[in-house]
Structures are given as C-alpha cells and as structure tokens.
Image 1 (cartoon, one colour):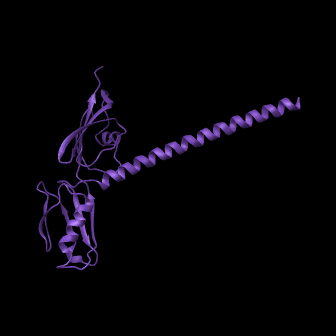
Image 2 (image 1 turned 180 degrees about the vertical axis):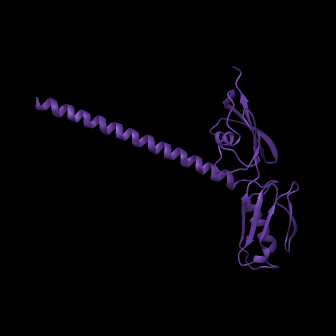
Length: 197
C-alpha cells in the first residue's frame, strides 16, 4: 500500500514538474518573441528615413548656436548655419549626422559631435473599415490594432487579417500585406479591408 502511494506521489510530482517546465518554456518563448518584435521596431526606426512632416532637432555638443529645431516641409530642405540649404528628406538620422559632421569639420570645428533626433514623427493615415478614418500622430511601437483604436476602432465588417500598408521604400510606394498585430511606421497609409460576408 505504501509503495502505491509513493508511486502515485512520484507520478504527481513528475506531472507537476512537467507542467511547470512547459509553463516556463512558454513564458520564455513569449518573452523572446516580444523582445524580437521590439528589436525589429527599434531596427525599423534606426533605418527610418526622414520625410515631410517630421519635426527634428539637430544639436552639436558645446555649440548652442548650431542647435536647430524644425519641421520638414514637402521639399525637405532646411537652412543650417554655416552650411546653407541641405535636403534631409530620404536620409536616415545617421546620414544626417554624417552630412552635418562633414560640413562642419575642418573649416568651422575640429571634431564636431552631431546628434539628430526626431521630436515628433510625421503622421500615419488609416482608412477602410475603421470608424474614424484619417491621419493620426505616430507613436513608436504602434500596431495596426492600436492604430485602429485611435481611429475609433474597427467596424463590424472589418477583416482584421486583411490589411494593406502602403509604405515608401527606397523612394517607391510599396504595398505590404499585414494583419492587425503588425507594426506600422510614420507616413504609412493603412487600409483595413472589409469582409465579404
């Protein structure tokens, strides 16, 4: 009788350990997938190319007279001290930093430390099967479902698995098939399609 009880207890312990191990593995996989998606978001923003509507800040360490805050126009050209007109549209933040560094290095500064940040991203646009289509301010990490929430939510006929994102890649507008969990970038045009039934 004691052998059977300890055998059952041993089986119960193994079963409990197995469940705990499975739960731990599931938690680790979820954490890994969310960190990968956050890494992807950060990578997308590192490769982000400036466009009209972005509000940027350019600073040079120790040089207050070289600090500029400006919203990029449709042309994307700004007038920067000592460099004159420079076009920022289509450039990454690193490319802008390098451009300004090269322009200031030598004639004006020996070793400039340039920093470019986006204070406010250009808006994204959402239309189709949402209650309030239109343009909305972009926030990093914005998924299609969160974007739809900003637009009053999905309509009853929304097909959340059939979303089209129009995004400028390498200067060309590209259509990307997406679902409600995919992330969007500034300037994206998101269309939520309707179900046929």
